[in-house]
Amino acid sequence: MSHDILAVVDELFRRELQVPDINPDVPLTDYGLDSIRSINLIVEMESRFDVHISDEQAASMQTLRDVVDQVAESLAVTVGRGDGAA
Image (cartoon, rainbow, N blue to C red; front, side, top):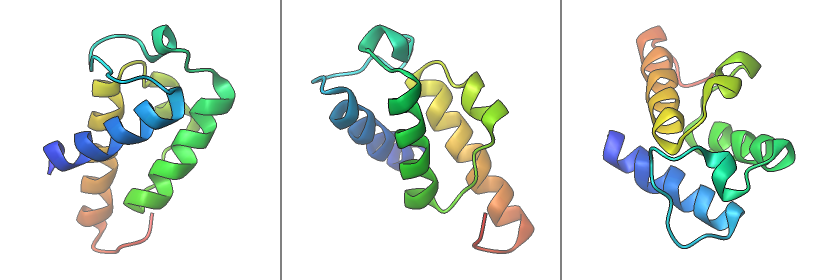
């Protein structure tokens, strides 16, 4: 599942940041991520994965790997609650 999350998140970020590749361990700000783009991407990920990402969680996501880990964790919490809504 994590590979599937990576594929979707990678595509979303590459499209939004207009870059051909993203190293999962390089800070996203190095690729031009700013607060407006960050908000747009968080909203898109919440919709795409049917999860909720808090402001605190969003602030801790510095790299693509952080984003994938947070989405995976949010999905696990949603599944653990036994519902499909975030």
